Length: 278
Ligand code: DGL
Image (cartoon, rainbow, N blue to C red):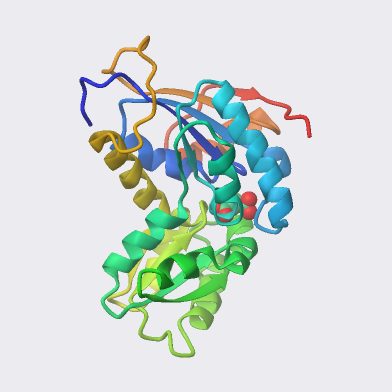
């Protein structure tokens, strides 16, 4: 990143704590920024809700982050990106990056067989956002909803034998009916990076796992480096130094602090409770 640039304030939005996997990747690639993270934990999960409901919640959250000073928005939630990206981008006054296009772009460039399997929530899969993005790049896609993964991860069972058994069933179903030869597996949900090693063990050798959290962080880093859709920056803050982090949640801040630390891979000291009126 160009250290002569003033700092950017990046607002990261998710339905809960899962989007902290995206923030974790952002902190690795874009450490020199101010971060505002909003987790809509009171209304989690988004993955089983309708497009209208998810869009309404997502617009409230993005408006909140803009009011807090975000000059770039990252929609870390795959479900919110898949169902409401267009509405969010239209309503926002700052550049918006979602997770679907970066994940699809990375998967398309990684797949030699031009066949990709995408796993995500029911809502993400039903929207076919990933399939459309991959087909637009000349890649065939099989989408598979894996609704049990989110509760398993939240239970802290990332390495549990039950998670392995569930993964075996889901992946056998996904890599079938002409998709046995798919050579890329896209993690199309914020929670799945936490079970990446289980999924890695359960897939055939030669299948590359594409984590849309990492792909999104790469896109953000590239945008800031090249100045493409560079947001207006906050000149009051110095360009160098450690990132600043502020966390907001709509449900228990204590739960967010404890569980969130697992997703983020570092302790979370303070979380501010927010009550977004409908
Ligand atoms: N953040 C959601 C996603 O990435 C998973 C959790 C939920 O269903 O809200 O799709």
